[in-house]
Image (tube, rainbow, N blue to C red; front, side, top):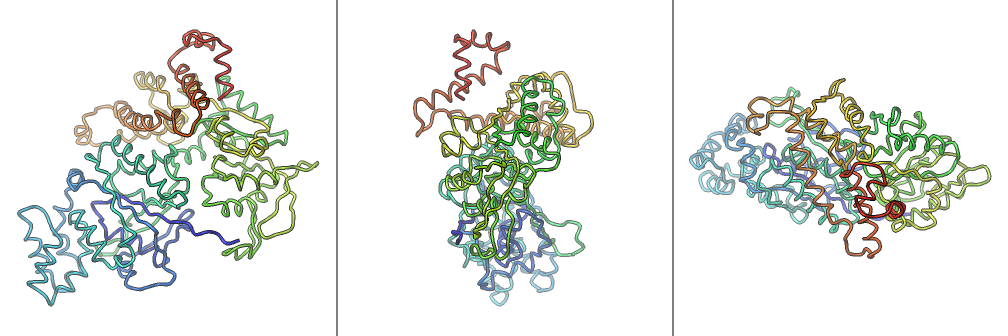
Amino acid sequence: MAQRKQENIYITWHYTTHGTAYLKHVLAAFYCGKVKVSDIQTSVVEPLDQNELNSAFDVSQNTGFLFDKVYYLTASQQSFDKISTRRFEYRKNILSDPKVINSEITDIWEQVIHLNRQENNSHLFAELDYVKEKYPDKYATFCTQVWRDIQHYPIDDQIKWFSEHSNAAKFYADRFKQIDLAIADLRDEQEITTKLATWVKQISKQHPNAQFTINVSLGTNETQVAWFILGDADYLPQHTIFIKTFDDKSSNTQDRFKLFSVTPVPIKLLSHITQQTLKVYEKAKSQKRRLVSLKLDSYLQQGFSILLLGERGTGKSIIVEEKSNGDLISVNCASFEDDAKAEAELFGYEKGAFTGADKDKKGLFYEAKNKILFLDEVHNLSKRVQAKLMQSLQTDHNNQFSIRRLGSHKIEKIECTVIFASNKSILELKEILLPDFFDRIAQLVITFPALRETPEERLQDWQAVWQQLKFSDVAPEEAELLDWLNKQSLYGNFRDLQKIAIYYKSFLGFSDELKKLIGISSAFEYARSEFEKYHVALETQNSSICFEKGKTAKQMEQCFHHKLIEWAEVNYTGDKKQIAEKLAVSEKTLSNWKAKN
């Protein structure tokens, strides 16, 4: 079974200290095979030499990997100059570059730098024309050195150089696209997050089946954080991986260009950390959390499929980790690149089953033998994969599943407990999933409460998050902070608490000068300010989620009732009867609204 070709998209921000030469070298690492998309999801690739990679595109390689599209995110030159003046102040560094000194054209570089000194700017193509006219015999040498100083030129010059004059141009001229997001202030988290989310939504529609590789380490601190916020909020395309590229400052090389590495980063960093270490159900105080815990204890003994429902960040993966005692095989269904990949991972395959299957592979079902198999975000499975899973989930009289590897005629009997999870509602799942598949996975259902439904756990949750992030043993508990935390809806649940903790801790490391510049004097005020910027931005994106084209009036009505109940439980105190009275409906009506969602 041949796997269809999938588009590969690379996305990165412009970085003032590195520029488009650094972009070229990262792309060159993929082109010459030093880095592969499949590898960087699981391992660190290092070290990479920029001097060596600079010439990679000079050679045509049959095995070279090229991204189908490269999106280079920028703002105006003025916006970047507000956050860094390095391109003005560090221009003279080229004069001490050993490569330039050895080529004996240092005097030419001094002259072109002097050309624009009074304007406090540098224009690459004016300098190239000057060198070509005055020193035609040195022009070719000068051109080969431009990349060593490219970061000190205006963004437009850098992009023109990459697209028209660099050795990557013959490969990437038609694949490269600059995206100016028109961000006025690259320190304004709300503006960055809002515009980035809008653009990502558009680009996802343009490339519906693509693999997105996003370099999150470039841009500004605020753009980096925005990627993680959008990742945790499920705003990114289904098949997305994060990477970071960074220089090894400790390397002994005297060259201005240090070795650099490519490292994978969890797309849902906060939930990844939570899944590893956060324990919140072991000592639950609230009735709703204890009910979830006790239900799961009982269901795990019964041998039926279990479906966990709840908003993102409510701890579905956390409790599975707690209850498994290490006997757990888990996978996020959103990580499957396509149907073939999903089937190969779930069921395994025989050598030769399809192109690239050069050895036998045991699937996740086989690995979960006598253990727990946890399939998170099950709503991402295609109907084809659902149909295949549906056949396997039919157990025999010994409560065993029948699994057949791709390319094999042999049926293997596997006994394991399968747990599915989704942040969609029952109503949404019934629309997304095949009816028979939904019935098969929803034999036993547990609904997780949002943090706003368990206010009595708020202080304990805050303490747990603080300790889990390893900030210190004791979380800050000033009265003003706790009062504010208790009033938050926390639609991101534990992930929102983590964001708040990270902002609070970050402020504690700020210098007096930085505190003065941002005009905030307390860690609490900074955490509140930063969180509300992101919170408002993302809530604005979600504000009309109930009213969308394609939904029936009944579906929109049920969604509205669900949101109304959420709002009432946050803003009204009291039991179900008191909330019903404040909404001017009967308790029965309130119960019916909840049951339908």
